[in-house]
Amino acid sequence: KGGEDFFNKANMKHSGQVRNVIKIIKYWFQKKQIVTPGSYHLECALCYAFLASLHIYSNLKDALSFAFTNINFNGNLNSCSDPTGLGSDISSDLTGEDIKKIVEKANEAKLLLDDINEFVKYIDEDVR
Image 1: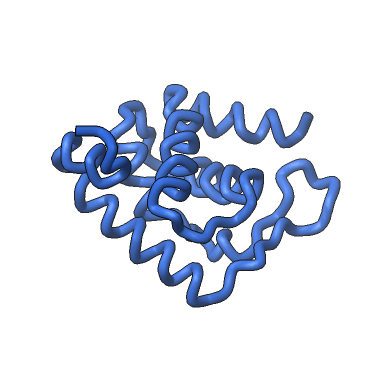
Image 2 (image 1 turned 90 degrees about the horizontal axis):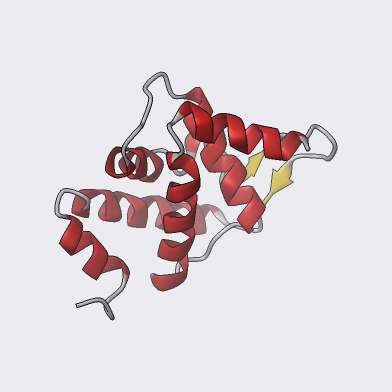
């Protein structure tokens, strides 16, 4: 229950965009074949970033840009606290090199957001 409240709080703060961003970023990891933390870990890491933001991201493009910029907010790709408070920290098997590559790829993706058609082609070469 605590985890669900955590996600809902982040999502509501940003006009429902956090869930959309998480889906797109998971798809991005899959399509670009980038090593990724576990699904729950990635969701928590992104939600922590969105909850800490002083700005409200109510449109998808801006929310996605924020997520790519802050994908490793507070080093959360390595380890972040469990929002339920029930377990120990959520940690990944990602190496420092894996995280560096994720951040580089996220920066690359962010640059393409200015042209949504280019961004879609970048994520999924099958979309023409």
